Length: 162
Image (cartoon, rainbow, N blue to C red):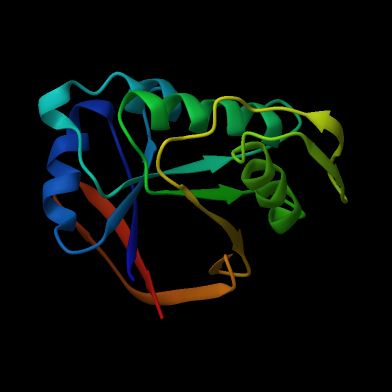
């Protein structure tokens, strides 16, 4: 499995999806809120291999990111989400993943304490959650490393793979 990380403007998302072809595009919107821009996709622009790259922080905690992932997954479908943070990316990703389960969540880690928290409804299709840590994507017992990087007319891109 390969993931291609790319930041583009909202108007270039369709071109970025087409350029990615054989991999999942993990997209960050450079000129609007990423989740809002992805949720605004029209039916003809939806793509089965779309992921989001979200940076969590004190202003945008993992629990809110999980709500956004759930919403975007319900509206347009998502296959993957990458969680980036200045510290404890895996712990933030654990919060996102737990809140996508739909059930009551009891979780205590470095970044959150959740007691009987819910993120309902769970996405219809499973969303793989990755943490960006040390230049790698880690999640679900897998670790993907940077295998290629470059730039094209849409800007810079990074490909992660086994």
